Amino acid sequence: MPVEVFIHKMTDHMESGRIIQWLAKEGDRVEQHQAIMEVETDKAVAELESPASGILKGIRPGAIAGVEVPVGETIAFIAEPGEQVPVLPPLSSAGAQTPSNTTSPEDSATQSQAIRPQVRTSPAVRRLARELGVDLSSVTGTGPEGKITEADVRAFSARGGAGSAEWTELSSVQRLTGERMLQSIQTAPQFALTVSADMTNALRLRDLMNKNAGERVSVTVLLVKIVAEALKHHSRANASYEGGRIKLHPQVNVGVAIGTEDGLIVPVIKDADQKRIVQIASELQSFREKALQMRFSKDDLSGGTFTISNLGMFGIDQFNAIINPPQSAILAVGRVIKIPVALPDNTITTRPVMNLTLTVDHRTMDGVLGAKFLAEIKNSLEKPEWLQGNAEL
Image (tube, rainbow, N blue to C red; front, side, top):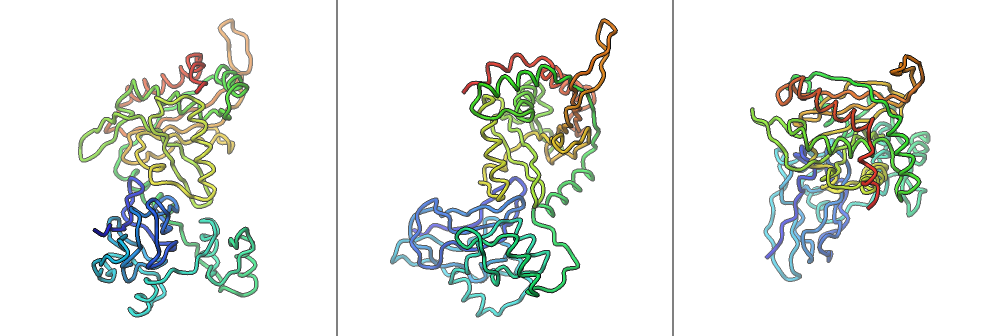
């Protein structure tokens, strides 16, 4: 029996995906889990895997590069060599958003039956090409295996290969992030609480762990573990407001905001409360590497129950983050900076201090609950000795 090929829901808020290119063509033999298409989601470019082993058949007319297809819409089949598959109708305007350049139905049908020329490049270069009005299929790549680089696109544009650009097109990540943040501000009554944490002991422990651990332990890594532990004790912080009710999540899944050239991305560390620090450090490093190419799996970006946004590495002392809906709170982290501190004996010294700002959805937590949650995070940073046993695998 033929197996349907369709775009899966790869992130929590994904409703459609834009076809970047087919990696296999009509009639090709493919294996289960083999990448057969590149799809741009609301957060990254992901590879669509074949759901079964067999022959790729019946590619739907109109399912071509540049078309945005709703999640769950059948676009092809995987079948046995002699097996017949249903004939799918062309993608309608209601079911797909076509590129701005129009083609005839005959052209669309022809294109859907053959693989588009593969354009090897990164999402950042694709964005630059859109800004400069450059058709990547006309650019010769000088990178490894013919990959198109930023320099290739700029050189092509300088040679007159594109018209003048007066508008900057938002990437899907930037557009969807902006829309969701607007929704968050408009629908959630948000307030912020700020504390300063003395980081003396936390930094000392971090340095000790870095001498012994196989992975680099950063302040963000420590925060993920500390926040995950605090979320176990404060269920309203590990919740979401949905349909007029509060949903308390059984899992503690901490998202960590990572800035990229294409926008903000929030990969999620699943069951962070159950993982040791070196495991968290390893996952975060893997996410940073994936962010360079904006290549994430569908599981990397979904299921978050709380978010941490750390801008301290950019010299930011303090900021208020916007809640990532439908989550109930987000923690904004500033840089560690030495400031004068009065000691109990009335002497003055300097201590490394970090500002933590918790933005809260008042529908799920009031000020007292938010303050108690933030106080536990502060206390764990200032007295982090309990973390030493989590440094080992």
